Each structure stands twice: as structure tokens, then as C-alpha cells.
Amino acid sequence: METSISNDWLPVYKALANPIRLQIIQLLARKAQSISALAAQLGVSETITAKHLNQLAATGIVSFSHQGHFKIAKLQVDQINIKFPNIIYPSYNAYTVKIPVGHYTNFSVAPSCGLAGRDGYIGRVDHPSYFMDPQRIFAGMIWWNNGFVEYQFPNHLTSHDQLRMIDITAELGSEFPFSNNNWPSDITVSLNSVPLGYWTSPGDFSDVHGKYTPAWVPSNVNQYGLQKVFRITDHGSYLDGEPWSKVSLSDLPYQNDRFTLRFEIQNFATHKGGCTIFGKGFGNYNQDIEVKVYSAD
Image (cartoon, rainbow, N blue to C red; front, side, top):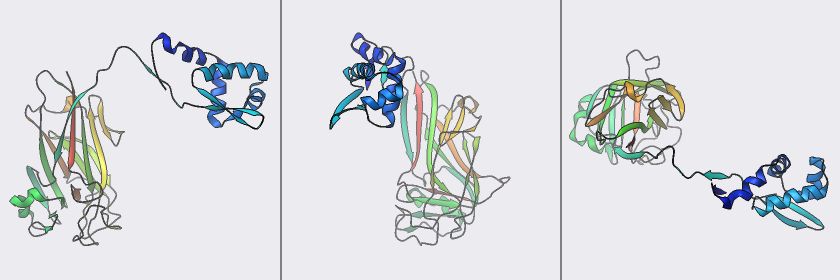
């Protein structure tokens, strides 16, 4: 139920402003009940119970039906939202950038490594030089053991915009020659050269074929990853909605025209199990690396 701060909705607020009626709502939330059953639980007469129910019914919170000789009350709403006349917290402006996984701008990788497109491998597998091949822009899946891959995306904010939040969504997994469903890897995510934190991928999955992975990809190599959402705010960073690190937007060196995003297996990582990035046409999500930048005027 949607309400507002106006006299039209006073009956709703009055209906809720009574401890017996609140108790009735709690009882009806479990199941529809007769007036006599409710009266017995409330410890009041059926007449008083009926009076309270009628007031709730007049607002649409409760409805009635009949089962034989019994009048049954049923809860009609599961939430009531109150809209205030002024917006205290203005909505954010936002723009989205979709980065194909082959559109990296810098890299340093070591075997096992490679790139794959819709119709086959791009260049030779386990030869890092092919990460510089012009055909890399058509890659839908890339993988490497040690090192990093780096992307850039535009900073469209003006001097009047205040950066409030950045969301980064990517489908990631470990990298094992062929595959290993139990192969942990610490994948560090950095923005503007500042490590936000690392996520430990549990494995390099091939138990089932990736939902969007092309049929030509052998069944014994990595098929899909796990979709992860990295969020950076002015009070810290989050991974899939849970607190992740203390790195905030104020910790990031500001670049007027771009942001720089890096996925990396660091030399000192506890689990150096490589990284696979799945993009559009591969894995289980059929999407590129997606970045959403939020700002306020």
C-alpha cells in the first residue's frame, strides 16, 4: 500500500495507532482467522474484536469472507509505504560502460594463458605475445596464470559532478591447465592503481558446459565463472553487498578523463591460481565487464 502525508490517509494511520489492532495484524499475518478465534487469542470479546476488524477493513488493510456461518478475516497488505512531500536524499545520476574482455589497454601475463573468441582460440595458447594481437578485441574469454590485465573506461564527470559510487560487475574464475573445480585463487581488483581488495575464486569450473560458452570449447576446460559485484563508495568498498575493505573513493587518485581497472594475481598472493574473465558470448551471464558510475550534482 502506497500512502502519503495527507488527510486522505489519516484513517490508515489511525487504524494502526492501537495496540490491539497491531496485534490483530500480527495474528492475521500467520493465517486468515475467524472473529471468534481472534477474540480468544486477544483475550477480548468478539464484539470488541469485530469493531477493531471493521476499522482495519475500512482502510483496506483487512478483508472479510464467509466460511459457512463463520466470518473470516484476512490480511490484504504486506507493507505500507509513506511518501513524504520533499526528497531529502536526491537520486544519483549514473552512466554505464560495457567493456569487452578483449579491450584491455595493458597487460603482463604468464602461462598458462590465452584468448578465445566465438569461433576458436585467438592466436596460440600459452604464448603471451598473442595478448597484443589486434584480434584480441574479439575475445570473449581470457585467462592467465600470473600477472595482470588492465582496462580503462571514461570519466564523463564534469567539475560540477560529485562522484558518489562505482559498481564493477564481472564474471571471474581461477585458471588451471584444462580445469580444476577446486583450485582457489586470490584475484586482486584495483582502481586507479589502488588495490581495493582481493576475492578468492574457489575454482576453474568445467563440471557443466557454460550457459553461453560456444560449443567448440572443449568440455574439459574452464566453462564459466562466478559473477562478482565490486562497489566503491565514500565510506569503503563492498563485495556482493558485503563489507570488503576500507578503501573509499577519497583514496583513489583522480584522473580527469578516465578510470583504470586492473585484475591481478599478485606475487605475494596466498593462492596463486590464476584468473579467467568471461565476457559476452561466454560463461553463464552473457555480458561484458560492466561499470556503473554514480554522481550527484
